[in-house]
Image (cartoon, rainbow over the protein chains, first blue to last red):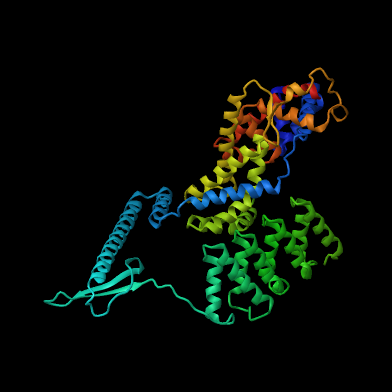
Length: 325
Length: 204
């Protein structure tokens, strides 16, 4: 081995990139070559010096500010239309397809389908528009229509009476609804669960998750109705701190009996960006803190969480709970 | 060398993330937010360490995740999402480093936490003996000297050194992120360490 090659390998060895079989060869060269030994020492000194410019701990305010700015920018982007997503999927699929004839055939089918669907939607929209105009001007129709054109979802059929000006149009409307009922009513619960996942307003999600969580804490039939699933989804994915906090509180009674709940809380402890959620997760895990999986996560958090207080609390919990062998 | 069991384990560990990516590709903003939360700390730390400026790091973070949001439909699971997002971030960081390099080619300037630029070399005497850094230099000044030495590297050398030394990534992964080969990444690391040793010779 010449010295030039040895110098390269010294760098690779210092960063753990040298294959095992070459480490021995390099060791023999270094034992015999003073220059290369000095080269290795210099590199070690550089590595030591470089630690004087460490990766800084991030200021939580800085992270929060960055995230808030990003969320505002994301909110300003209009959602992709279905045909844009379809186009994207086609492009992806096309690039992964090897057989050209199959690709051409599929493209033809997808293109034909998309064209038909697009044409249908266009025609339906035109018909709905025309029908709404006709309906609003013909007060003498059999059943007067009170709705504005925007409330008509689609037209399902049109029939004209023979030798007459009368047309029968069947259409569907989007009508805002209001229901009221007990929190124990399955229909109300279903709506709350829908709201917890899909509502665009954080306030609606906050209310729905809060109510579902309160039901769980009060042991009002949280078994097998998907409420726990809804709370776990909110805990994992909701971007609002208060929603996640409420979901976590709602899951508290089930952390000992339901492994899925325990996993969700452990995930929150490991990954949630908000230190308050992570702190609450540690408190909630108290009944199962001697569990091996919980101890593993606590041990990871005790070593690597960015927040010193959380690291300290995790260590305290680990020290007081005897490990189950 | 990874066996099939390791590959299987890795695939299983990535399953929830793949699910999130698919949901994000289908238009779920909540799934995308979950991906952001998973990677935002690493992205910010990398950008902050490379640029030395919270303002620049915030811009890079913002632009990286906006790009990821726009182009997540193009992600085809051929590499890990981690590699994909890092590729976006490293490209943005490289652009930023190039802009900075041309702006202060011959200056030893760093940006402090408050965003003010300071000329480090003018604040440190070159005539001092640095034979014992632990006693004769305080850590802050030493850190600034390292930062100056790093700023003298080419943007690509800086990036490879950063990803290897501070982020501890494999050269193969670094090659993938920078759209180059493992061999090129290796040579770039070698050049970077050589230059740094020359730059910091007085400190040893």
